[in-house]
Structure formats: structure tokens, C-alpha cells
Image (tube, rainbow, N blue to C red; front, side, top):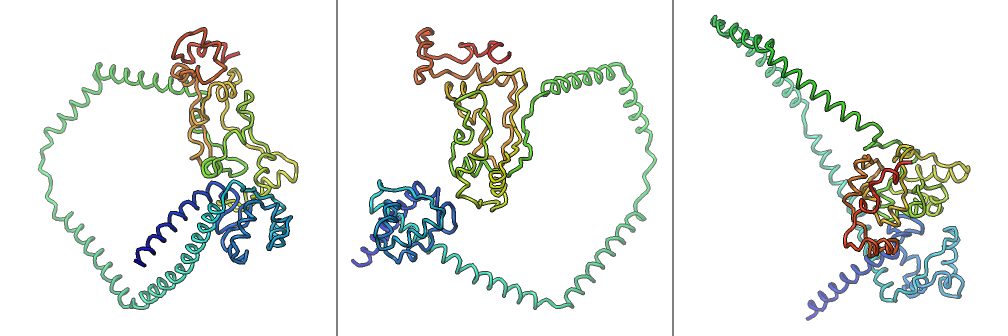
Length: 393
């Protein structure tokens, strides 16, 4: 009976920890990590720092500012922590119940114990591997190395002797060269024949024409273009791992023609607090801070460039048309360094206009147009998407 009850409690604890992990990822992971500082302090050892009093810690999480300014048991420590982290205000989690905060704290405690076990086992494994390597190296005798070198020299000498004997004992070829001149003569006649020359010339013309067309069509296209940027900015980290929306940095994408390249002050919205990256440490973020302090903009290199005679409006496609950024720019959330994913040629745009259906029902912008067309499915082509003056001045 006792073992059954214990198993039940273990199962409940496991489910509780899983709920805590989901709540931690949803509410805490943007500012905290278990074993490293992000915006706020590392959460490893948070129970010990608060004297093991989860009730006080729960009050602080519910409303940190009320706790700091109140007369609670650990208000002095909370105020000191607040000042240490540049008075960054922690979000008030009034919507979380005490039970949900308890599950988050249990998850932090479980992760802390797992990290401690991993760090304790690593030195032991290294020591054991080192002792085995040292013992193995001591057993190798210098005599064994001499024997290995001697056997290798003997093997090479035998190989050289075998090759020399095979050349000496190789039988002389019998004179049967009567067929060879005949075969050579037939090949020579074929190469100088008019039909062969005409076929070769035709193939050469086809190849040159195809190469010329491909080269001509590639003029002005920069698919795969990936310039070196002044700062090693990772879209995979920002857009993929931290789920930062494209519109947060490229603020013009829903408002005007250009998506705009983010300015330093947009970067500083986060990097005022986050000053150490997970991959490059402080090196690359330091360049952002230097740009901010010196008042000098970051000289980003533009990747996607259209000819001057081409008109393209981001707001028309993203805001009105509802086109996702990945449609043209590819899976940027998976790119460590962004490159030009599509060739952005005129044919590529026309094919998109011919195939893309306009969502007339879900977009009030098309309400009047929907009444005029009285059709269920309309492509961009039907509303002027192939007219030259729409894209060319």
C-alpha cells in the first residue's frame, strides 16, 4: 500500500513539474534562465537566497513592486535585488495562482538538482578517463615501437622488389598492330567527315545560345547574396528561438513602401538589459552599445535590392494582401545569417500574381471590389497584378 501511494505521488510530482516547465517557458524564459543571467538573475539557488520561504517568494512573484515597497519579511532583499539589476521592473503575475507559481518553483528546483548532478558526475568521468589513458600509455614499450617500424620497412622493401620482378618477367606483346591502324584510321575519317563537323557545330551553337540566355536572364539577380554584416546578428536566435516578430524590428513593413532596417534604439529596447549573448558573449552586443553611446548608426549592408525602375510596396503585400514574410524571404527564423532566398525576378513576381488568390471575405479592404466581381475566387492577376504600370514607373 505504501509503495503504491509513493508511486502515485511520484507520478503527480512528474506531471506537476511538466506543468511548471510549460508555465516557466510561457512566463519566465524571456527574462530568466536556470544557470545564467539574462535580463534578471539566474534562478539556480533561488530557494536558498529566499531562505526556503516559498510563501514570501510567491508574494514577490505576484507583484514585485508591491513587495519591494511593502513591509514584508524579505522586502529589504527584494529592494537590493531591484537596485542591483538597474531597477528593471519585473512583470506582475497577478493572473497566476499560488498553485501555478508553486509548480514553476518546483520545476526550477528540479532543474537545479539536475544541473548539480551533471556537474558532480563530469569531474569523476574525466578523472576516470584520465587515469585509464595514463595507464594505457605507460604499458607501451619502446621495443614495440622499434618492431613496428622494422616490420613496416620490411613490407615496403618487399613491395618494391615485387614490382621490379613483375616488370622483368612481363612477357613482350606480340606484334598484332594490324588492327590498330585500321581503327585509328576509321576514327580519323569520322572526325573529319562533314556530318560529324555539322553535328558538332550545331551542338556548339545550342550550348552557346543556352549559356547566353541564362547569363542574360541572371543580370541584376542576386539570389544567394549574403554580404558580411558589421555585427554578427543571428535571425535564428532572435526570430527562431525567442520568437521576436519581424514587424518589431522592421517597423515600416505594415506602414509603407520599405520594411526599413532597424535603428540602434530598437536594438537597445532589449540590449539595455541583455548585454551578453549565448553565442558571441559580449563581443557583438558591445558593438551595439558602442553605436548607442557614440551616437553613430550601425552600417548594415542591405541584402534585397530591386532595380530603380521597379516599384514594390511592403504594406500593400503584408498589410492588405496578408502575405507572410517567409513567402519572399524564405525561412529567416532558421537562418543564422540572412541571405537572398528568392531571385526576385519579374517572372517570379508574375507567377506569384497568377497563382495567389485574394482573400476577399476576410479583408474589408476588398469589400467594394468583392461586390463588383461577384466571384468566389479571384487571383491577383484579375485585379491588375499583371499591368506594367503597377510595378514600373
